[in-house]
Amino acid sequence: MSAIPRTRPSRQGQQQQWPKLAELAGQIKNGERSAVEVVEACIERAEAAEDYHGILKLEITAARERAEQIDQLVADGETEGVLLGVPFLAKDNFLTNGQAETTAASHMLETFTAPYQATAIEKLEAAGAIMLGKTNLDEFAHGSSTENSAFGSTKNPYDPQRVPGGSSGGSAAAVALNIVPFALGTDTGGSIRLPASFCGTVGYKPTYGLVSRFGVIAMASSTDVIGPLTRSSHDAGFVLDVLAGRDGRDSTTIAREETYHIGEPAELSGLRVGVIKEHMGEHVGRGMRSATWEKIKALERAGARVEEVELPHDSVALAIYYIIAPAEISSNLARYDGIKYGYYTSSADSLEETYLQSRGEGFGDEPIRRMLTGTFVLSSGYQEAYYKKAQKVRTLLRGDYETVFGTYDVLAGPMSPTTAFKLGEKGDPVAMYQSDDLAISANLAGIPSISLPAGEIDGLPFGLQLQAPAGRDKRLLDIAAAVEGVI
Image (cartoon, rainbow, N blue to C red; front, side, top):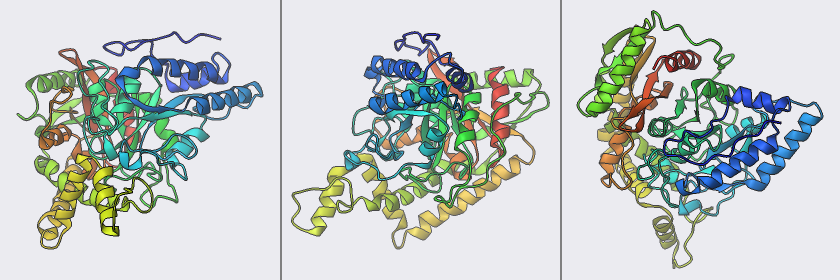
């Protein structure tokens, strides 16, 4: 059997990379590599990268046992499962029954063990994948840097003094460090794609409802989406093919296409590419604008028809998101009251004090800030002025996208206004919120979006964002594969 070289984290995460997922699973199926060997390599890499704090807990015993079972199945000639023996990590807001605690990186759930399993985890394990553990995130996925984690920040693999992005920063860092071939994240307002951009990986946000959210701790239910962080768009499509489809336990799920595997990349010649004018303004760093234009010109040289397009209501997307999302957060977090489950105080003298102290002590500053904002915009006298008006503008934004997609196949632009910023640099919450400025519109509109590694600016990676119409995930992945070949 061929050995997997020992690796250690490097500044640019350029140690020995995993093969594509289909190839790795094929090697395990035909006996070139054993599942045990692959899992041990992942554990070794995880332990070597411990200082980056991307992983909250490794499930070493369970992963080893599952790997041994898979090797026995292979020995017996039973090689079903497209991800047979492939290890992965899951963001710690996915419920995992009988395995690691699901903490959402919060003291509120620090000792919580889930009574059931997320559909996404079930599907991956049914396909033969092996869950290695849980990754770090901003508390309850509230943030853009992982600095809001109750258990400490994750560090960027390119520069440990910088953030990996958030809230799926632990998953992005783990993939960038080649600890695992892929990881799961959630994207409510850019939380898969922003860390992908900051860490130099692929981050995919599917169409809203394409992947079941059952068993995932809710943030803002109308924009939450589950997706993979991978090394390539091919791998993103491979994972999406396992995850996508209706789930009777999630009424928001939609029908899937026949397949999301990428066969041949799309033809770039004649492709109609719209560059979002609002994503190339002065609020985007000059270096980011010029680097993005350079990549877009490469598409033009490959035969794409590139034109600038306008999304008139995109300029207020950040504002309406931070009305709608906190409103839904305040509702979703109401269940953590110190009574049913999660953290509770033992010093309260009354039921009211139990609520106040449990929530005050269990939640960090950012969840409290968002709950207060959400309760305010839903309160009597303000719901009409803020929440309902934001929903109306959201509808207008969706209309902007529908109009533009009547002419263009895909929209392009930078994934973030900047590259990864330094730990502690954005103490002002509003400045932190602005990190997601270019990602949020796709969530509000429910359309698929992908961040592709597009190179480096001053030694730090940046991503090129591509967006497509709702339900055109296969088409977007095919285009992304072609774009990867020229940028």
